[in-house]
Amino acid sequence: MTTDKKRNFLIDFAFAVVIILLVYFFLKYVINWIMPFVIAFLISALLYPLIKFVSAKLKIKKNKKPVAAVITALFFCTVGVLAGFILYKIVSAVASFIVGLPEYVQSTIIPSLSVAYEKIRTALANMHIEVDIGSKTFFDSIGSSVSGIVSRLMPSLSFITSIPGIVVTGIIMIISTFFISMDFDGITSFCLAQLPKKAADFVVMLKDYTVKILFRYVRSYALILAITFGELLIGFTVMHFVAGLQNIFLLALLIAVFDILPIVGTGTVLIPWAVVSLITGDYVKAVCLLVIYGVITVVRQFIEPKIVGNQVGLHPVATLLAMIVGTRLFGAVGLFGVPIALAIIKDLDDHGKIHVFKKVAPKEEQAEKPDEADADDTEPE
Image 1 (tube, helix red, strand yellow):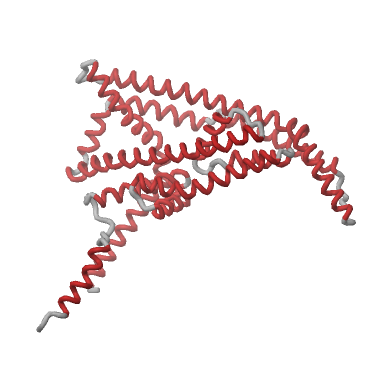
Image 2 (cartoon, rainbow, N blue to C red):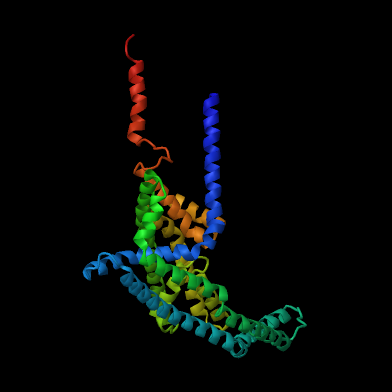
């Protein structure tokens, strides 16, 4: 390698490192600072086609601000009512569970544990092994511990429902959405005008590719959710006949939504449910829940990289690697963000807009090259 090539390589390497560090700093820190405005811009971009459509129907060409304000207000009213209803139901369910937990432990869990404890103690006694701790003392301590945990959780519950920071961030986001929606054309035109023409064209092109990849990404996870819902519904239908499980459709839907959420997953619901069923002696239900969880976990680990990779144009291994690296670096945001970013880069590279990856010749062309070389060698001098 010549000196010029080494220098060019070092310059390109340093440039790539700087870009990677800037992207990391942006995703790790800056994105959290400007997140209300990013969300506001995304919502405005989502509502913009509807604003244009309504304005065209009403034959409003110049001043679209009233239409934008009304549509944005309707959007937030609808989302607010739905979010408030869902939040109310979740908080009510959690509060009822926490309040009723001590009584459930005293009336159901502890008697079941006491029976199991006595069986174990009898078995140990038959083996001439004495246990000094009395069951009453042991299980009284469990009940006291549960009551203490509940007493500590109650203030936390009221604190969670009134976090000032979330309220302030939400207000900023809503106000920003109104301002951006009412002047979306002007804001986007001004931002693009600050860039050189090639850069502005690249931003517009990047936006189109991003929207396309995001649509495919959402479609792929909708398919995964549908598959998980189907597995849960089949499993709960079996449990309905063998264990008397009720409300199987609603339970399957809620747990399937949990499975899409980062970190949470179906295990957050199914495993504690199985453990409680096991403790209370409902062994059939416990086994069914564990089998359902095992099937969903195995299928999810197999289909997620494949479905997401096929939809966004990535190899399943690359998709899985991007998910793992993204989660390690940026948490839940990285789980979705890094595969999306990699898919956008690959799509741009495939269409020749950027040049990042070297192309691999098809196997047929690779096989022809040695034959051509051999033919050249056999030519007479």
